[in-house]
Structures are given as structure tokens and as C-alpha cells.
Length: 90
Image: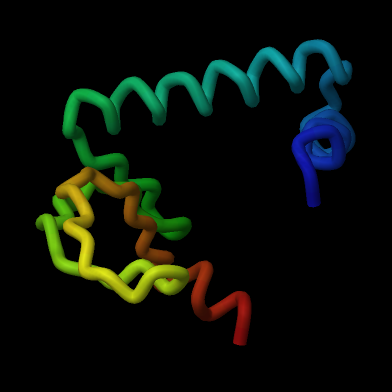
């Protein structure tokens, strides 16, 4: 499912216009992004939790030249599915 299909599904399920559904989805995604940028954790009970994890720098190997390189430390977004979502998938 892509963003357009998700907007259509939101519009159909919530009884909103596609324009209003797009605004709602964009606002939700912006709010989640802003919270993650601040280092906050977003917990949506029953759905899951978004958080930011720190990845330390590490040594890797360039597959083309076989030389060792240092991969810089970075932050990564993690998502842990909630119990209700996991149960729905079973």
C-alpha cells in the first residue's frame, strides 16, 4: 500500500474527503517526525511504539576494494509492534 492508497482507505473508513484525509495523514506523519527529532518516544497503544536508537560507529568492509572502512555512528528509527497488532497478524 502506498500513500495514495492509504489516503483513499482513510477517506473511505472515516467518511472524510480525500483532501481532508491527506491533511490528516500529513499532520500525523509530521507530528511523529517532529517528536522523533526531539528524541521522544511515540506509543500508540495496541498499534506499536516508535523510538530513536543510537547506532555506534563500527568497522565494515568495502565489497569492491575489500578495504576496511569506518561506518559512522548514527540515529535510527525503531518500531516495535504492539500486542494487538501482532495478534491481528497471526
